[in-house]
Amino acid sequence: MLIGAAIVVVAVVGLALGVVDLEDLTGGEIGASAPPPGTSEAGSPLEASDTLAALEVEAEGSMSGYSRDEFPHWSGADEFGWEAPDSSCDARDASLIRDGEAVEVGDGCDIESGEWVDPYAGETITDSSSVDIDHIVPLANAWRSGADEWGKPLREEFANAQINLLSTDAGENRSKGDRGPEAWRPPDEGAWCDYSVRWVSVKSEYELSVNEEERAALEEMLATCEAGS
Image 1 (cartoon, rainbow, N blue to C red):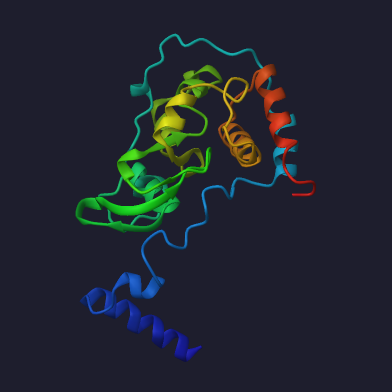
Image 2 (image 1 turned 90 degrees about the vertical axis):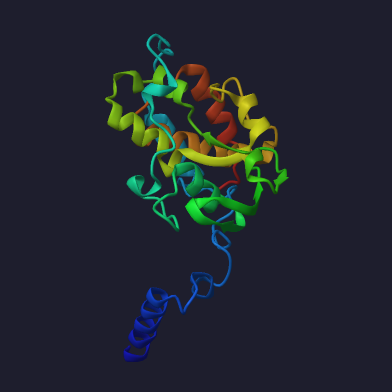
């Protein structure tokens, strides 16, 4: 116990004096130990099936009054519980760092290099400018399923929440747009399980409704999960 405490003290002092580098303590580049984006941390498929059954089913609402400006996004990462190397990082930066491999971060949280595997089609991306940060449940979809009744603070939380952001290929994200799973699914069928689990988890966390077609599509996608997962 005393030896362990001594090591911690040495590490903290070393960091403060600039003698010890953060990479030396973490064993590699920032983001190198992050779980692969295809591995859902949003719950198991069995839990997602039960959660989906409990979601309120309603007809899709109106887009009246909607604007992306109603959802302040790319706010400061530290305001929304992200682990980021610098206070200048926003939620987009933090998502890139979490989801990438061997991510190198420069001054002002500039993402200098890294590698990202698109969770929807499996393509490898090496230029961060070609990576979009997908709102798993799109902002407009959330608006149509209950977020139109929220205040601005909750909309900002939703737009910057770790549970609802995922680094993806820009083309796949723009192909998806604001469509739900009844109208768009990842082109790689192997990604359907993870995507549907994440979608259900977000809808449940923020008490958003689903429509009949959306629920049926999610049930079909969850059925692709391995039995007992």
